[in-house]
Length: 448
Image 1 (cartoon, rainbow, N blue to C red):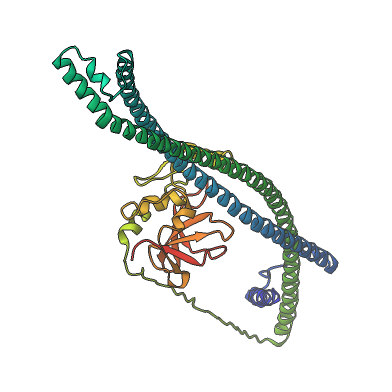
Image 2: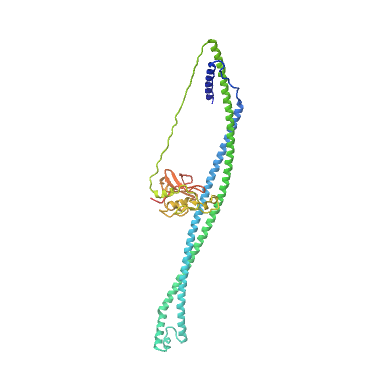
């Protein structure tokens, strides 16, 4: 600042001197002095600006802490939302198992009923024959049953019936009785399986309810934290405005001081020129001089370059990359592409995910790997779907997972430290650097 004033002084002095030497009546008069703020005013302004700057720094630190807590809460919400996804998958599996068990029980009941009907028919036939033999004063299979015959034909018929009852019919009766016992056992087993399936269905529903309740708790905490963050941001914005005003005041005072110093230099130059003019007039000689200087510099720049990693699972990677920019929708996405999201009663609903067509994190993986393997719509199950490899060996096309306290997010590694993901409600499918906070130590590889 002082160097600039000195340079201005030299230039102004040269102009004034040239004007004076041009002849009488052509000298440029220096205007009246501008305001000159005192040193105490300058110091007070600078102190105020420093105080405001310190306050901005403190608020920025508090805001960073709040944003860190907000990130933790967002991870917790994602974890709870993935738990809800897990409960939904488990519920669907339990319903399928219950339906199968009910169908098996129904089939077993029908078979047991059919066997019981056949046994009742045989038993009625046997009872009729026994009753007929008793009325004739004979017993089944005894000689008197033959003696009551009215003709050779009747005798032959009685002999055939006695033989059937004493032989194959009795054996059939025993076989059917055994079959009835087996069918009863089968029916009991089917009922037991049905009860287990119903219990599993109830457990899955309870798990989903618990996950939704925990999710609501996290959502509420996140809302409160977001509100606190907004308050801090508003406070910081206000203080930053005050800082700007304080700096402007200081800058204005400093400009006034610079203008006064420049005027003072011009005044001194004018007085010097007048003295020199008087000396020249007395001696009848003159002279001139000039000086100058220059400086300069050249900027430099550099642009980093990188090349993509070798393509090993390009079909999968390109399917994922084809969805760049597609909006996030919780519960959205299947093997065919983006789908409507589902309600969660919290953040996803607030963003209208149920009315959006898009992907959540695990839904994007389902679509990307559709030609390789059918994946469940839950990142925790996707983690178990392939071979585990240490992060130090991860390569293009591997799935990365987050959540040491419970998996809550999945993304696909692209190589060169980059990954593709469906991040969160309000976001879009994107490519970003790999985040290592809370990442699991192993990636899951489905190909190779």
